[in-house]
Image 1 (cartoon, rainbow, N blue to C red):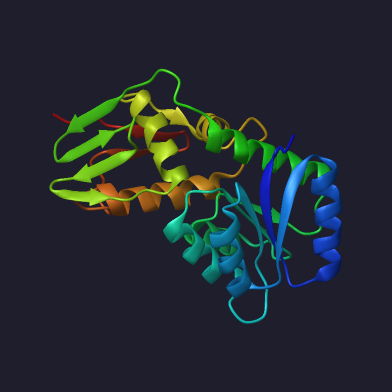
Image 2: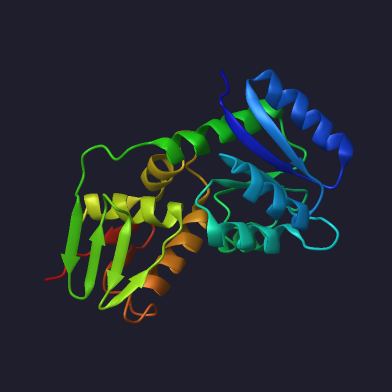
Length: 230
């Protein structure tokens, strides 16, 4: 029984062979692409459950490929890269990636990140609010729709999950570690740059003035708090 279908995008055939052998050995169905253009074609044809995407490829690079994939799909995207700077991680997350794995990586670490991403993607909401209305913001958590005034706003899966958790704990400061472990999984906790990127993106989409947020507030040295508005 397949554990899910994964699209592996990398211009290095040796890496693709290793990934195919490893993932197939753990019951994943593997689809391959050699570059960004081929990745878009294979994605539309195969509809994978998750994408492993190399950052550095000739032609269309990983960031542009990620942006285009994210426009049409909510499937988890994990960026694989030799670059390890915060700027590169932030750029990948800004492009719509769910996670960032630095090469060289241990295969067990990668498998754990894949499992975490797929669990979050398949998880159904447990408890928590079904909707939220405050000021000009309306959120329907069951249909995953967000409206600001008369304008519908599209959130990425991670942005939505982050917003759901903050609203479920509205009025209370939520620590960085708690947010990371609840939205990304128990193996996370130190990746505060992930939160900075996604909170900034959320504010751009739901706040009247992102520079002076009214809903998602920063709790210095602690985390973030969702402010209830009437």
